[in-house]
Length: 237
Image 1 (cartoon, rainbow, N blue to C red):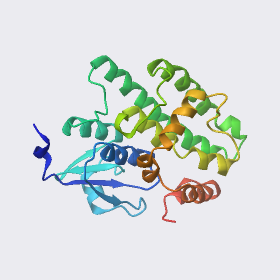
Image 2 (cartoon, helix red, strand yellow; image 1 turned 180 degrees about the horizontal axis):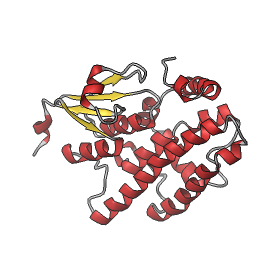
Image 3 (cartoon, one colour; image 1 turned 45 degrees about the vertical axis):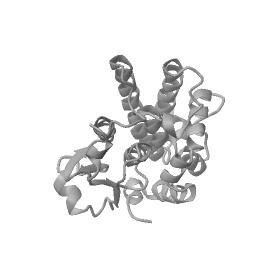
Image 4 (cartoon, rainbow, N blue to C red; image 1 turned 45 degrees about the horizontal axis):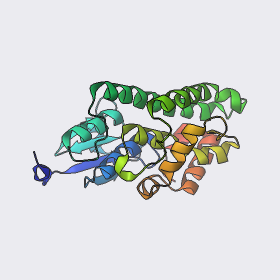
């Protein structure tokens, strides 16, 4: 099963520029060096392809591989890793390590939703109270990933990225915009030194920087959401 096996593949990713979930898949494709077409979805006016091929969730990301749809970001990333067997592998070979990575990828995935909820409720109440659950989860992540990845982890290259790196930077990679809009610390170097250095070293990679949306664009969209709630946030700028 050599590389040529995938020579005529048609890969299309339906995403949305600020979706952490869609960014995971975009990063996975780029890390594996897989050529793909990108379709930006307006979530208020979804494309017929999205509605037809993803009738259950009608959500992004959706990957079409030779016309066949795959949905759910973690499922898609695993599919990519199993279908294109070239390096870098996004999940470890060892079954136990794979299970641990899957567990934490899911945990980080949920952190995304917790942050979204916190951001919305920070409009109406004390910000620290709004973010309390998020901070508890972040503490847990800080403690546990230190064990999972001994301290050398922040020596990161685009060749060594795996599912956890992808999940982490897609979920937390825009944290500075959140900090700016809310005027509070989200990832504190004192409290979360490991996560802080891990995210920062990921953000230094050109591949990651060019995949995440520009800071100012995220800030202005978040300002809009802060004023009008999340539905405002999915309208095009």
